[in-house]
Length: 244
Ligand code: NAP
Image (cartoon, rainbow, N blue to C red; front, side):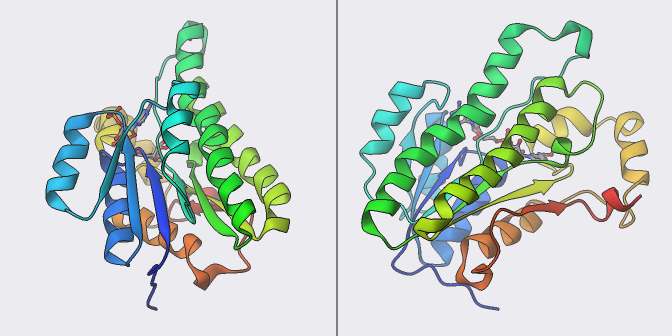
């Protein structure tokens, strides 16, 4: 199956590292004029040196007004990947307000902010578009220490459905991707200890965690015209974990 995004303009948030970086690179490979947005300039510089046609955008999505101004300068976007996300683990009884604010600002509120700007242009141009929100299996299963992260991803799933409902009439499809552990900086930070990861891994029928490439492939499929009737889906990438 060949996917081409020639003539399309794409934006990926959190594209400095991990999953977002690889999605942005694949979008360029498939012909999209791609904007990689992230917080750390050094990551964006190294991405630009790797892929010279990449457009890089430095913004802190926790800053609603500041990032909105930057986003409004980007011009038309046809394909949006709301990938930026953070995790701030703590046992439920120790969770601080600041951890909730930080996690919700980036994992949930930034999706609303970025999507409003991009969808406004899509609606005005009348040609539709596609949006993928990066969620997690933590949206559907309780994991210890995941009060802020898990509940934020639960919100991402419902946000995806509401966006699907309201943006569908404008030919804008909205879906989510929900991986279990992926071996990025974020994944390693929480799951390297086999004492912690072992019990989760043993419940996955395929007996492995997710590769970044698996997430890239699912995301590109959902952005592409190979998935024209897929809308409002939260696509689990968890090797069958939820069957057990
Ligand atoms: P990662 O390696 O930590 O990369 C996250 C990227 O998002 C970084 O480039 C980071 O930039 C950027 N970012 C974070 N806060 C930002 C902000 N306020 N403004 C702009 N950019 C910001 O994480 P990842 O593992 O690739 O995760 C990507 C997405 O997948 C997240 O939504 C995550 O929740 C989801 N996910 C990950 C896993 C996993 O196991 N890795 C599993 C399920 C779902 P800085 O480094 O400069 O902050």
